[in-house]
Length: 440
Image (cartoon, rainbow, N blue to C red):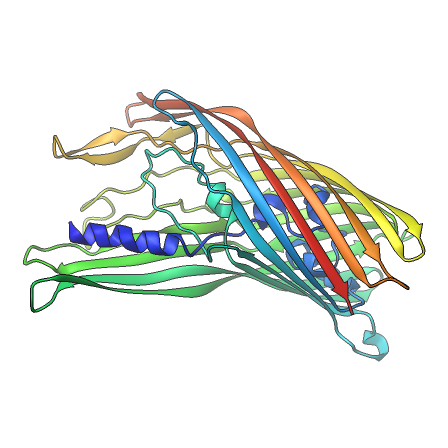
């Protein structure tokens, strides 16, 4: 019993000091987030580290950007024995971006650049929560919007309007142990050891300015699978002569699937129009939870319960974005931005049931799997102000997003096909961000 309590304490401890990345949900950057989260063919500066590292080759000035972003979730699950409003904490964090042109001469002049992008939540590093499958939750939203993330990209302009780039993404994951034992006086004590470990994923990109027109550009980007696990092993074997198994409190705190994006954009000095298609391989998602007890023989489930096996589905996102600039005075440009996107859900509408141990009967019973998600439709907008020339070289960008979850019914059934739970998922998400950058 003490081991279980210690495990809960350990989870609470790092759940309050850790979280996950919002880029895959909302996009990244003060400019492109206002344009339907497009950018594979037109992102610039530090934003290219997420959208397409090839575009880091367009960086011409050193620039440092700081910003603040936030998201408020109103996620609903309506049905019998459901809470109507699911409990989800707001996400808020700080954005840091750096534009670095590499000062080569000769044929490499103005051809190579580096974009660096950072996101850090204001109150945690990475959040991982272990919830029972029968607890109402939106596993693909909420906590996924909160995590320390680091991205970098190197881009080079090759020739004939072709640019290529390579980059990386990094997240923080947690590994640790909790050992409970009694001292010489018989009192119970614990030793907790947790550490943060970086996990990485590659990013590749290429763009091509179509021949005969320097205004139309095609961009392609690939982002590898980025996952951040948490694993805390609770050891209570020293508490009693009774054999107590090691408790493996583990799962995925953050998961961004492997994905490919293609975008066509018309890029002019004061005008941008972009259309993007993204394919995400959610079918490779291993699931949120892992077995608490690892069986030494007999396979999964031989010595404990196993999480439900869900057939996650690949998803598609269609995005559109636009920007129009107005030169108010020499060195003063005001830009209006707008866009939107639609992204399908990776969660199937029919879920298998789960199992739970019932103390009264001392047997395993069937319980519903109460996971919820829905297709999202988002509208985005924002403004930007750029100063240069005789003014301080400053860029200020503001954006807002409104995500609507299209109502959708999700059913959980047992092995015989009997309905265990049925509910409707819906809700909305409000996102905002403000960034300011200084060129030097």
